[in-house]
Length: 73
Image (cartoon, rainbow, N blue to C red; front, side, top):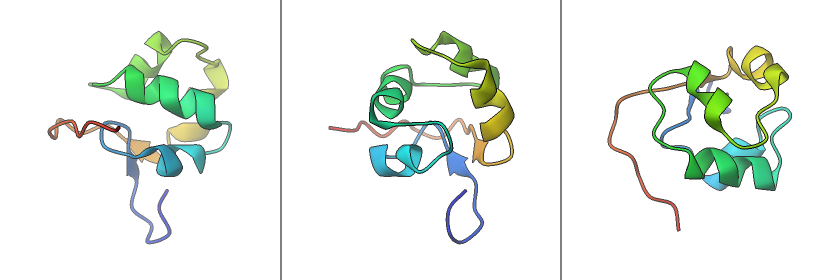
């Protein structure tokens, strides 16, 4: 969750935002970005190295929108 209380969108979050999530380090954040787009939180299961606790820990902190995907370089 962002400092302003907004949920972090898995489809548009940058590397730094993803790294601030519990249990997500640099390599996990990069794999999440590479696996985009997501249509639901369940899509996290297709991320290489997926851990079941990601769904439990991230569900109250993140969202998935159908917004245009912003490429991260």
